[in-house]
Length: 396
Ligand code: DOR
Ligand code: ZN
Ligand code: ZN
Image (cartoon, rainbow, N blue to C red; front, side, top):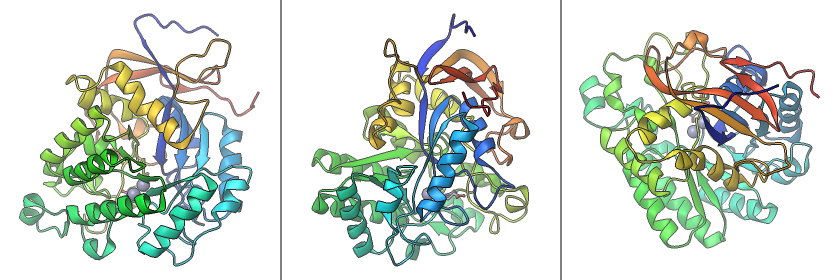
């Protein structure tokens, strides 16, 4: 099969360190198959599937199932993330070693959705992860500061009467984990950094030579809490949409490399869990098929990154962070390549119902976004082309 790349931008396949695929447990909102389709259409060749499934991915039985199902579907490499603790935010470490030694060879662990809250448990997890050479990714949220919180604590939340989720809930855990990682000589990865203060902590930690990395989501780059007037639950997410000043700080930090990469936190939810009252709605939004366009709108168009930089934050850095040797690099002559061909001049209108995910909860509904994926190649084979997935389930 031939691809006409004229006028296009060729990039290494994108790597998402933070995807919720909902299988097992909530196949009414996303499956490994539908999530893989969304990933391929979004330009991804590898995704890390978070552990907050039902059952939780805290044993090799679950992580190996996710891995095998991903291979069967064949559209994107699905790397399961194992839970750090039994049951997520539990009191006991999960068997990281068993998951790392399983068929999936789990290389990243996270209790995302919840925070590894107990400092002693976090310390032990970091030591355990260092001995296994795997990565711990932390959803930084001090739960004692976010109880009942619905939105970023600030003028907008006060005006709307929504209980606030303070910056300190994120920053206090980031600060603590920086110190724990330093003292354990361990690596730690911060999920979805969302505040200007987190950026300053990361800047300091990196200047000290502490082995910390961090991701930012497309929605925290583009959207802020002014979207909450109207109380549309589609804008509810954890961590919450912050203030304009935070989005500016996050964009700058991503351009400078203080924030390492973009990760989607793709979080599909059923319509009935995203409707009605803001207070009752679940947090989270779709991200896989809109990530590139949002990065172009927030980073490339304003001149904060060039295409080389886009490749760095969507592919190269995330691949380095988890140590995927066959991802995140441009063509190596003679080897099957993971590639995305992008039409930089395309403009498209987002329609949640047309996205490949079963769920439709996109905050970008009806928005016009720049740039579109023309084709995605996984190990030299086309997985998506012109907005359609190529059936690969026969698995060559
Ligand atoms: O908004 C979020 N949604 N944040 C999380 O931490 C979890 C995620 C989910 O699983 O829905
Ligand atoms: Zn999270
Ligand atoms: Zn998440």
